[in-house]
Image (cartoon, rainbow, N blue to C red; front, side, top):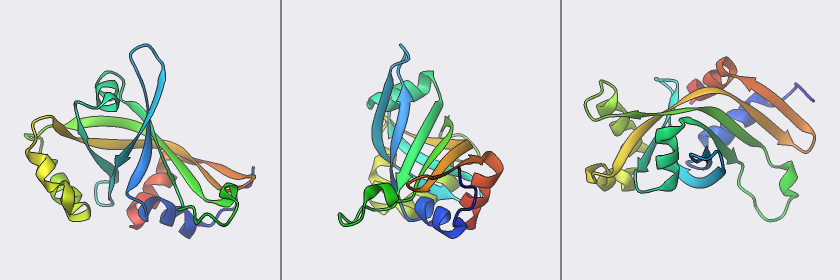
Length: 160
């Protein structure tokens, strides 16, 4: 396992994207994945997701908040996709109610990055979730992978 990685590339993988694969487990322990939008909050050191309670992944999270979020460099269709940098962030998704002290600022941050999502905040089935990072795994290409601690990932989040 190669510990020498391009820190700037690692930060770009997370900060350049807004769409990621979310991995959850259902009540029976079966794996499930879906796609979700996310917003980085460098000030809070977290990610924000705005999810519908009608979605299976949200129902899973409300029972088991441990999740993983996978992001990747864009595939240009030319290079070997195994050379693309990719990051899996592990952590917990915690619902932040409208009465929570962080809600207004988080909503504002989310909308500033994803303005088309603003009408969804008026829907009763949507909730804001704080992704609390616990660690991750970064692959910078074929055969170049490192485990990332919570502290190292939070540093990447705050570089924004």
